Image (spheres, rainbow, N blue to C red):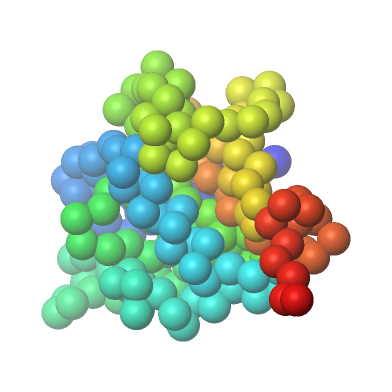
Length: 176
């Protein structure tokens, strides 16, 4: 189900671009994904995703190209200049307070390489669930899953803020 949602979300992004641009969507680098994950962490709390803060981080709604001057905005997808990853907010993810990063892969074999590159950016994953890699960090959980299909492979990153009862004890700061 999640893979279908991730595919449909990126398909929606791809559908907004003109056919030549969609075919030229570039694979996202580990640096691109790490920057997008950082943005997700900055706007996500256990109770709220502050999409209004995206503009201050340089992210804007994806514009549908080929529809007159400037193009129409795609409500649930965001991009930023110089970064090939997308932030996508599907209804189910917003309800669950998940921020999602979608990254195009050059091919299906690039999935593990992206995970390795990301480990150099945000640390080693400390869990695995099938093909999913999990980074259980002090205040957030990052989950990387394959999505898309053989012709348009993607990686979906779900970023979720931990609630107070989920935060690791060493991450809790007390004032004396």
